[in-house]
Image (cartoon, rainbow, N blue to C red):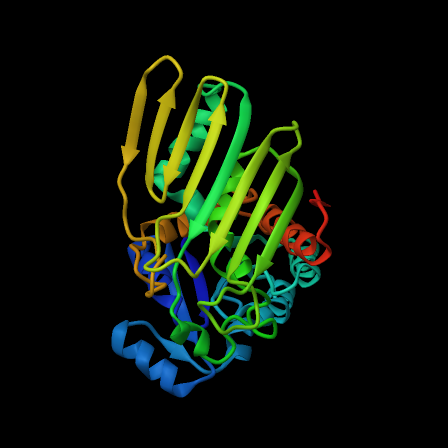
Length: 341
């Protein structure tokens, strides 16, 4: 396997687990530099990590020795960055969401496809061992035919979180709990369950927060095979609880709570794996280990080396954008809405 030179673009709150992952995989990747337009942020980063920093984005993009970029900037900056990087032939690992709006997300995916570069999205929940074990169990048919599924993300963010400039706004984040917090678990849910065909939902801002976008969503789901399910997402549930996915089959039920999996079979057998761990669902969004981020980076590097699409490709990541759009449209129109495929 070749060693990749990667540029890190953005040195804000999200950088820590990514840099720790890059350092863990130093035998496969070299960090060419960490870019931030803010000198104070570059100084703060340099005090924590022994990696080069730069304020010259143009030079990084023009550097022919850099073959990939890790983009950690706010959502609405993603499209112009992706277009520039793709035009320069750089492969891209992009923090979620792809973009603040679905049309812009689609444009980013198309830009990479036309340029022939790989685009992967940081959806680390797919890469937890318990999630992978559940995916394998479902693929084996051990739970029988799919009958129902539900997903719940009952997290907490204090008002001080939303008082930060741009947080919870359409202008910077593009959305609230769905696009910014629950999106990780929703992406995992979509990777495990059949296609969601239709939703009926209510979304709003609770009395807990002062913010522009939604902090609470309740939805009913109808899957392509006719099965029914439920969705529950909020950042108003103090002090924050582990996200939960339940999948019901004709031979048993799987319960995935954060990083812990329990399988309850109809014949009385029970299997368990993993253990509960912090996932960033409370007041500190970064209170989690970086092992899943390391797995995301490993998948990205493996895909580059094998010249294949990563499982968390930009094209695959559009599915969660389509689900979120349908939930919010249903709430606005007060009618069931079909989910784009």
